[in-house]
Image (cartoon, helix red, strand yellow):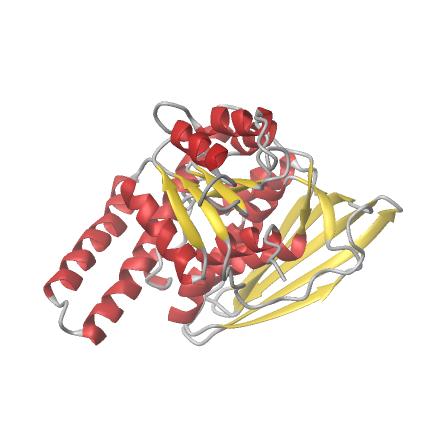
Length: 371
């Protein structure tokens, strides 16, 4: 584990040094930034795997029961893997065969399962290879269905012997044969554990040298109160004119968030802690301080944390107190963390590191531009 974590960290620090030394060479900087981003995503995956396996071993993994949109969830998985797919020059085909997009279940864990299987389909593929995604809905009764996710790749495949051990932690077959994208050997163990916790099944068929197919079946409740027709896939939304309050105590994280938001057209005011965010919100609508469209709230902050600030906003007498969208943007990314933000009155949750597409899509849901 020390090796697997230090390797991408070395890449991040080393690529930052190369970019700094070649600031006058745009092509070199662009190439370096692409490699730095890939190393950062690799490190994020490693950290997520280590934290997840630790929680499973301690019995602290909890499945939630909340509404979510499968289209949005799969889009987030695609956003996360986009850089790796481009680097491997992979072709992805997606087929949806289902009536209901809105379901009730444990979205963070469904996303984790699909992301882990998809990540393996990329890592163990060939440059210029193919990945086929299929989603089928199998009705059980009027309120429930089984969703079958099939992920088929044209990668290096697995031997019959190794297939008997693929769900064991840290198991990897012949590291020399996979792509340069590294992993811990924990992804499939985590996926299997989560599938079992959700009452589903996962099966694999593979031929060495030809490719692998995973089939995951998850029972989910249908959210019949949601819109019948799923939203069509759209390009990244514009936030042009959106007025945001960002509560963030870390200057580097604030700079990153402001860049992403302002690049999408939003106007951002930064508050360095929960108390400052509360004060800034209460001042809106007075004098020259315009009303806000939404608040992005970090959770762990000095003076007043994000949960306290959200509760204080909801309990205030401000005319927007009950309706202003408050979105958690935090490194607290477990299911119980999401539940705590909802209990504090927040509308949505975005985990760090921030993903640009996920951030913009969530905010766009709450933006109603003035005509």
